[in-house]
Every structure is written in C-alpha cells, then in structure tokens.
Image (cartoon, rainbow, N blue to C red; front, side, top):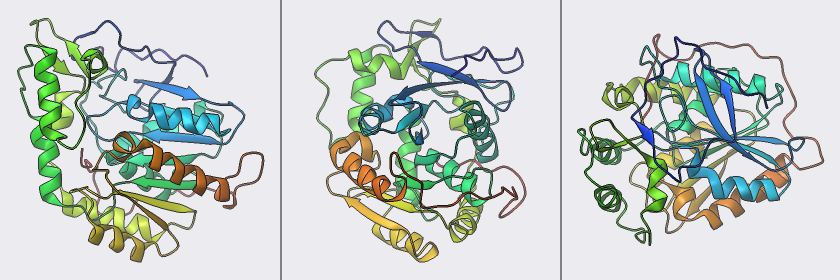
Amino acid sequence: MEERAPSPAASARSAGARLPGTPEPMHCWQGASGNRIAGDAWGDPHGPLVVLQHGGGQTRHAWKRAGITLGAAGYHAVSIDARGHGDSDWVADGVYGQDAMVADLVSVIAQLGQRRPVLVGASMGGGTSLVAIGEDHVDATALVLVDIAPRIEIEGVGKIQAFMNLKPGGFDSLQQVADAIASYQPHRQPPGSLAGLAKNVRLGADGKYHWHWDPRFRDVSRALDLRRQRLEACARRLTLPTLLVRGGLSDVLTEAGAQEFLRLCPHAEYVNVTGAAHMVAGDRNDSFGDAVIEFLARKVPVGGEPVQPAHALQPHREGAAGDIHDVP
C-alpha cells in the first residue's frame, strides 16, 4: 500500500495536536480531493478484501477488534478514517456529503489494486457503502450494513447530534470527555483508564480537548427525507449478498426499520444482536464478528470464488440532484 501525501488544497487543518499514545495510521491513501485518507489493515494482503467504514464522529479504531478477527480468518481487512475524521484530512471546502465519501472510497479501492471488496459500513459508513453499490460506483462481492437502513428514527439521530454538540468550545480534561461518552452510552461499562480516549480527541492551541472531527461535518443540515429516498432506491437495486446487522437496543434503527429494509431487499440476511445499541461492533464485537465471518464464509470464501459475479460498472445517480449529508 503506497503512502500518499495530501495536496496543499486538501487542508492542513485539524482539531489540534495528537495526544501521546494515539496510534499512528498503518497506511495512508489519497482521497478524491487530494485529501489524505488514513487507515489500518490486518490479515493477508492477498486474501479477500474487506473495507470497513465507521459512523459519523467515529474513527477507524471502532473496527480494530473486528479487523483483527477478519484478518485471522484469512481476509484482508482495511479500516479507513472518513474525510474530516481521525487522522484523515479535514477538507478545505468542508464538503462531507455522501457523494464525496463515495468518491474517497472509490479512490482508496483503486489504490488497493482495484480488487472487488466486501463493504462493511456502520451508520454513515453504511450509507456510503449502500450508495457506492446501489449507484454502481463499486463492484463489490458482498455488503454488510451495521445498524443503518433507509428508514431511521429521528429521535435516535437527535441523540447522536446532541452528543456531538457537547462542549463545542472544548473539554477541560479527559475525565470530562469520559463523562460525555458515558452519558451517551449508559449501557457500557466505563473504561478503567482514560488512556484509550486519546485517539478520540486532539489538544487544541487553547489548551482544551476537542473531538477529532471537523465541526463543519457536525454543523451541516441533513435532509433525512431526501436521504431516505436515495437509499431506498439503492436498496432496491441490490443483487449481491447482503447482511443487515441491527443492535437490539438501537434507537436509530428499530425493528420496523430493519423489516422495511428487508422488504426493499428481500434476499438480504438479517441478524439482531441482543445487548448491543447503535455501535454494534463496539458493544458486542464477539457476536458481531461471528455473524460476519459466518456470512462471508458462505458468500466470499477465503481461497474460493465469491458468489456474486463481476460486472461492468455503470455509475449513475438515484434520487434528487445535489449531494446529501448522511446521519452521523
């Protein structure tokens, strides 16, 4: 994997200095705007490619345990930081819509040798994956959507946005950061150490701790009705092996929303992970990993041919014109 330097136009801005102990990205690629896309990888580079995309406000680290599990099973798992998140560049024009995310994904896949990937996406990353396949930008072998579908609940999305809007002026301490995360995820056991929070924040010139993401990503308006129309159209076009994984405690994707997706994509398989909320892989990585490995072993076997045949891409647009910002 080749290290790519960002162009000057991409943007050198970030939330501040990385804290000691923050893992360096294993690899970097160039996004569609000349922006740096940071990522990690596990497993055999010659194994079936699995690209993992996180949700809004998260980073590639959300997939670490899943990536290790996939790598151990013989897959080449690659987890990327979306533009404006983690160690990837904030872009100068502040564009963080679905079209831009898909374009970055296409660019990274090309630099990975244009191999046909499995796309695994949570929340925002799932929307990117669904659009990339449904609008024929990526010839994927399988799709795994994690707690995301065209129909989502406004109340659950509102809780995410409220969390992301906490302390826009920054936190005074890592303990304040930990308290904010605990208030959003009361079902999780608090971490025994604050050291793991280093990768989620940056130390600003003002001496305060700021979230890693570009605040312009947080501040854009989101047309959920147009988003739903676009993703429904994409879901109807899916022919490849598809797995929907829902967190049983999720208030973003309800059971009704999951069943509606299954009506749009009748061949899709479905797993409901008990005890997990919206961040399924983080809450129940064991159950999540088992479900994905079992699915991929049947649909994209290591050492064998994927069930889904290759096809010539014909990129097009579904839904209304204009870029759409997905949910966080």
